[in-house]
Structure formats: C-alpha cells, structure tokens
Image (cartoon, rainbow, N blue to C red; front, side, top):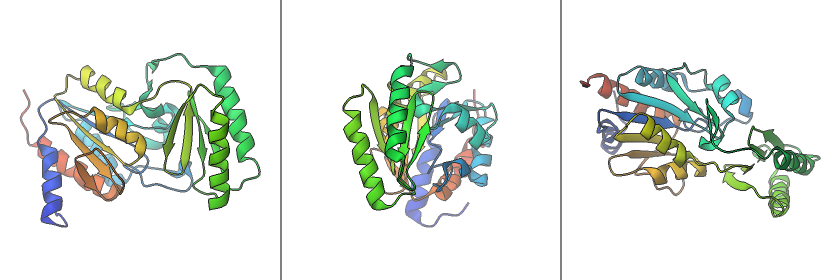
Length: 254
C-alpha cells in the first residue's frame, strides 16, 4: 500500500479506527463510480468494487450504497451482490419499499412540467424515479441549462415537493428524502458503533450531518463539507476502501 504523502497516509489511517461493529456507506455517482456524461454508463471502478465486496464479506461489517438513483437502477448499474445493502432515492427507498406514501398525481404533474421545460433545449434531460423527478443539465449549454433550472424553480412554487440541488441537476421528490435517515436506520439495524461514509455531492451532506463522535466522514472532491476528511477522486476512494479492507481483515471479531 503506497500513499502519495504522509498527510494522505494519516487520513487513510483514520479509517481503521473503526469499532468492531461498523457500517461502511458510500454514494454511487462521483464516489464509487466516476461522473460520466450519460448516467446509464456509470459503473463502479473495478478496484473499488472488489474492495467493497470484500468488506461486505467480513464479519461485523455492514456495507451499503446510498444513492440518489432509483433502487432498480442502482441495482443494475452497481452489479453488487446481496451482501451489499442498496438504498435508493436519496435514502428513502429500501428493498422493503418506501417509508412514506407516494403522491402519484403530483409526481405525474412534476414530470410533465419538467419534460415541457426540457423540450427544445439540447442536453437538458428528465429522469423519472419512483418518488422523484430530476432535471439534468450537465450536457446542456450554459444558457440552456440556466434557463431550464430557472423555469423549474419557478414552476416549483406550485408544488408541495422537496427540492434537492446537485451537480448540474435539480430534483423534486414527493416524499421526504434524506441520506442521513438511511444512515440512522442502518446504524440501528446493525447495532453499529461506528459509521464510515464517503460522498461527493451536496445530498451527501445530510449523511455527514448525522455522523457522531467516532464516525468518519470522507468528502470526495472539492466543495464545502461537514466531513472530517477529504480525498480527491473515486480513484482515491478505491485506495481507501482497500486500505480499510486490509486493516479490518486483520482484526479479531468477537
């Protein structure tokens, strides 16, 4: 295991100070997988995926992907085995379903409005999910992207929906979504005394806010954050996961 600097080694070393019962959680896009122009092309970095599965196979270690993706899409794109827990829709969608009733009429209305906003603007796309709709402008020109987002914000004044901004995306959910709630649920389910969470986007800050003393939050990339640690890219996440796997593989669990 090699580090680019002593400071980097210190950051990664903090990851092994996890108690015997631990949850390791990650965002998907921009964390386990690099950001790509076409969302359907996203895949985990092979090294990161192998390390994550290795962690999931250890005793006293629960591993979860907590993503804004719909659960069905997260399952298909991540190709993770059952040992890895999958939580979609920004922490609101578990295998058991949603924790809140979904207003289908409002969901349809938002979808129709965003599709109308996207129409005629190259690179502006609409992604429908079971409980939310996202307007993507990553591949649009700056002028079209700004106009689409402004129109969506104006339309949103008529909706009883939860808006979440991300990297070149604006999403409207018809139920409360919070990755922090997912962290709390996983912590309780596994009686974990330590949570390690990696994330790159503003939606991951809700998870970082739920971390307590003894937990470890790792921000991926630039930007303000409540996380205590930072790495530059998904490649660094792969290194950190392997380091954590190596360290925990040598631990004795009761």
